[in-house]
Amino acid sequence: MNSIPSFDLSKQYKLIGDEIRAAASEVLASGQYIGGSTVQTFEQQFAAYTGTTECIACNSGTDALFLALRSLQIGAGDEVITTPFTFVATAEVISAVGAKPVFVDTDLHTYNLDLNQVEAAITDRTKAIIPVHLFGQPVDMTRLMSIAQAHQLWVIEDCAQATGATWAGQRVGSIGHIGCFSFYPTKNLGACGDGGAITTNDAAIADQLRILRDHGQKQRYLYEAIGVNSRLDAVQAAILLVKLHYLDRWNTQRQAIAGRYHELLQSLSGIMIPQETEGGQSVWNQYTIRVLPPEAGSTIEEPHNCRDRVRQQLQQQQVGTMVYYPKPLHLQPIYAELGDRAGQLRISEQLSQEVLSLPMFPELEASQQEQVVYALKDSLG
Image 1: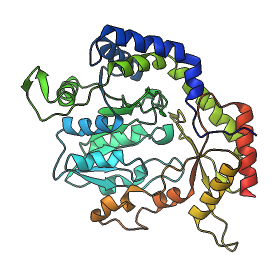
Image 2: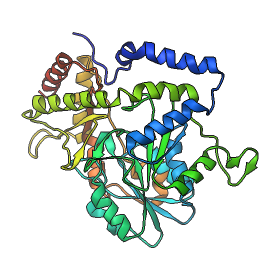
Image 3: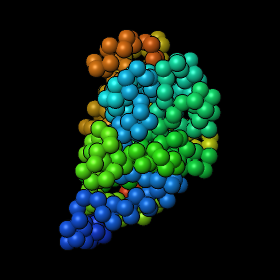
């Protein structure tokens, strides 16, 4: 029995390694390692891909979110609504600019922000909403933008896990006021290192973002704002240009793999498979099931113990899995001062104890999926 990792970049590199090496070598030979035509070309092509007029490359998805908030002048005394069921970067950037993250619970079926609860969290200090298109599944942006417009709020899309996903036929990152992307290697469009980008259709916001990412300077050595050093290296831009041409193909492969998982798992008891929202098209950065706790009256077992037991047994059968995320942000030590207690955001807490991400990458073979499902059935008993 061959081992199956949760994610495998080596297969992708075998397929396009020659192109990546050639692109990187061309940049290295040019001597232009920061900025320049390669980065500009990537920005132009990525803007075109997302359906936006502006793209500002930066050095990480975290910086993309941070710079987006800075460009909107969100800071001390302001509140930003987001989900607690996400990677910490989504919330830590809110804190980093001096604002307060306001956590709203999660939808049990999509794992995304529960839009039924957003308006109740809006106060006179609320300035923005950061929806996260988690695991590649787009948020209902039609409804969210309607809420935001009614309350005159900014919308910053966290697209880190959803490059290429669409809502109502429109790519994420082009629907809100700003879109933020990560090119961390495990993302659908991943660099060979860190990288990020910000998209917008607002030229004034784009101008401010370009100043902020380069030490606050629009003209060399003339500083107009307190900025940061957040530039995308030209080598990474060259690599991303190569991969961008393959992105739709890879996303289609991910969708086919997700469809196969659906078929193989739909009749399996003890789990709940992920659901897509009508109107959205996921790009399946992760295929995340819920391992359900035993029914009332059966052997007592805490939900996370049930999930962790299944995960351990899968590992023993050489199937790699991941848990995103084992503790929601409102229960993390850094946010204890906000006063949220266990039980307040019930669905996020439930998901954190039940979710399990199965192997997912474009090159995952059907036979490997069958091995995963066989091992999962065995682990569930």
